[in-house]
Length: 192
Image 1: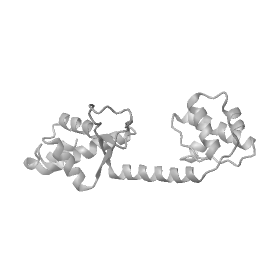
Image 2: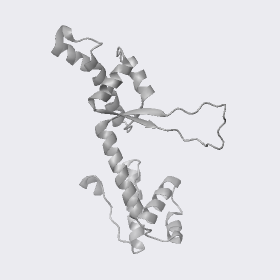
Image 3: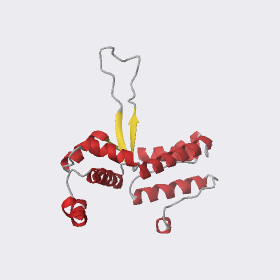
Image 4: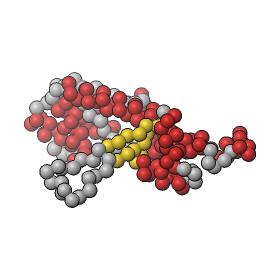
């Protein structure tokens, strides 16, 4: 689509090796990944996708996108046990990832806020009450119940129906034990 648009606007000046095309394709690939829930994508995957899109110089396209500031480069150092590390083995390479700045920064801010909430939260119920309330739940929901009832803060993921049932059960259980509880939903329709 973008190539067709560029040809209509630029005419003969639209070339596959135009640096603007490379930057645009990097942004489009990262936006597609974000829609699928991936706010960052490994650099190697982006480079492969750029080759499939016939971007003339994938590395240059990434560098240009980084220079524009719409894309952020992230480097994650691999975890490894220094004591068990074999001297003859290769040191694990850090993993480089890319993300659209607007999503990566928003996710980082949300994570920092969640950490602050979690650090200042106290247990809502004692361990015995938590164990009793989560006894018949599947493991993933049991863990979410435990986190919410021990600290008052949790983030869940899953289908809307699963989440609604678990959230209502959690709030009902907490309220039944004398804990003031509130359920926050993204829309008024979800709350109904």
